[in-house]
Amino acid sequence: FQAEEAESIVQKMVDKDRNLVSGRKHLFCQIEETIEELDEDGELEGKKTFRRITRDEPVRNYAGDNSHRLSNGKVEVSKEEPFSILKIMPRFNLKMLPDEEVDGRLCYKIHFSPKGDQPYEGREEKVANELEGVLWIDKSDFSLVRNTGRLAKPVDVAWFFVTVREIDFTFSSTLLPNGELGPKIIQYRDWE
Image 1 (cartoon, rainbow, N blue to C red):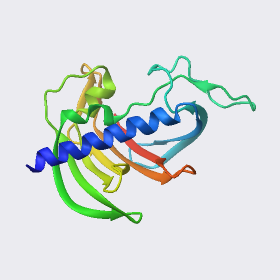
Image 2 (image 1 turned 60 degrees about the vertical axis):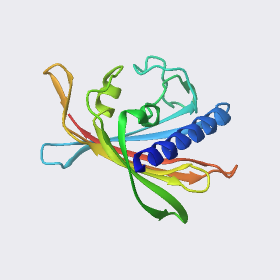
Image 3 (image 1 turned 90 degrees about the vertical axis):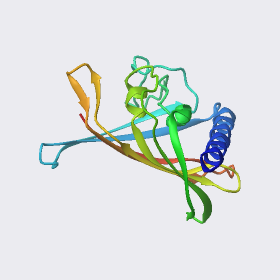
Image 4 (image 1 turned 180 degrees about the horizontal axis):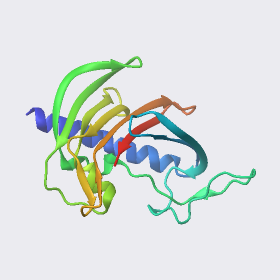
């Protein structure tokens, strides 16, 4: 019963997210990405920050061939679609945890973990299939309020040449001017 309830809640969250994205596809947003390079001891070696303007639902292009950075005051729209774990939620085991309040919102709290041996299209999905974490979903409207996760085990992504050893991430939302929740911060750390 608990798994069925968790699946129903997560499906409502995914449907809600799909509707929100569809309603915002005419809007532009600015994405700021900071990459910190660490040495073998975990000490900061260098830091780069990029800004780009994108639509909420751009054309899929993981290679980034058409993505443009903000430079010299010229703004171009990125064609790159960021990967979303919400698209593959049926590939996870789900478990209800006790409800919890986040940023003044009473939330369902649901743990997700890998089912194992799931199909994938590309490296992003292969790695995402091995994530585990927690979703906080607003009980009043099924908006995603927070999502945290980590890689449950290392994943080979290029035969024996590249192994993703660690990933952890945090997503938090914010109240947008139109009263809906939208992405505020997405932080992630990975080690290959």
